[in-house]
Image 1: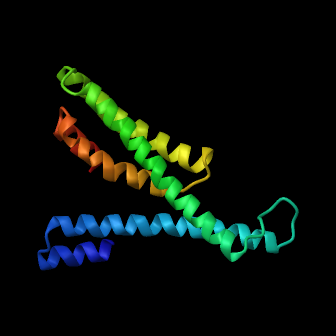
Image 2: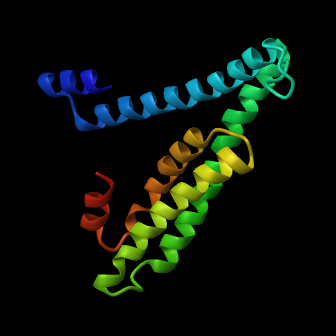
Length: 154
């Protein structure tokens, strides 16, 4: 996406198009990690070493892909709802110096969502974090210091 972003800057494309291309790139990365984990488990089982990998047929492979990707998306939605609840309760209740709590909430929920998806549930942490970001965007009106949030995440 870096080369595409540079090309879009040269031709004067709208910034929203660059955001869409970056999002599509992250979604591709998430699905590539899901495919890698499925094929690496299959490859390690072919080595014949006890305890490594697992035999996966085509049907199980499809089921595993959908479980990992859709499960990660559902965990991301749940994380986004938790973040929106945090932002709602922190909205306009903080003095100027305490607005860092909203930034800390976004970082904490993002890492927690990735951890829960990847380690606890065995789904895609990348896809869960991506879905968290897509949905948490709707909490933008609940952010007290937009400049602080933008400078942190950009």
